[in-house]
Length: 365
Image 1 (cartoon, rainbow, N blue to C red):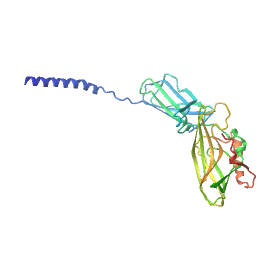
Image 2: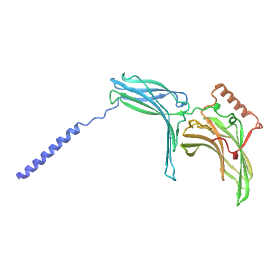
Image 3: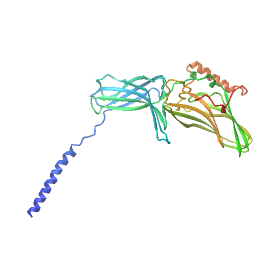
């Protein structure tokens, strides 16, 4: 009996010692500290044009009256990246390029801030040759602002990253004058059956010009002369963005449908005209980038646009377009251009127009 009691006593002592070693640990648990500062930004414009000033205010909300700033900076960075894998060789192609990397101090070290909201305005000029913000599967161009606060306490130290939208700087002044004139694009598609002629489809796409700025409406007139015994289905106009990603001597091309206007169908042995086909260029798309740029420092992502006319069976033709971020630099010249466009809409359709065969190709690269 005594041996049994001694074993129970030893087990009880062991449990008490174990509890004594565990309980203090649970009692000395570290309480999570709450941050005493919060950072946000306010931009003067939702997007900034390359070559212009980025005007912003950093908003700092503090709940600690004893906060002292050791350093408070805003870093503006823009980086372009491309990357894809060759499915045949498993070779990876990656390119990275920096367009801007600037750090701006927001206040002097040792500055004390009280409880409440504080504003720190600053300006940064975006380089004139900066490309537009862009996101895709095989490449991106991203701009961001990193605001970093280093204070005398861990609770007051924080950092935040905010995206910035940049728009390429381009005007009608930078493009050839002939792309601002009316033009007719013509094409013919011959159909055969067992090597025997099956008929021909003639296409004419009339445009007041082939250069536009983002936000404008493209007004096209499509004429189709179907001289075959089969009707055409799903006739449509498409605004397509073509992207070219570069890595040294390697390139990858992709297409993205931006807008589509369905025109209907064309019966066999019938000629039809589709007037005032309107396609609006969205405000959010990037302008044409790297257009016919010879030599110098080129972008790793080139962006071009085409107006594509499609129909079944097997009809597809492309018309190159130039899209800028703005019209003319001179407001008076832009106003005169708008008046010229309005007069052109009211003018007679018998005015001579330039013509171009689509099969001849184009100078857009």
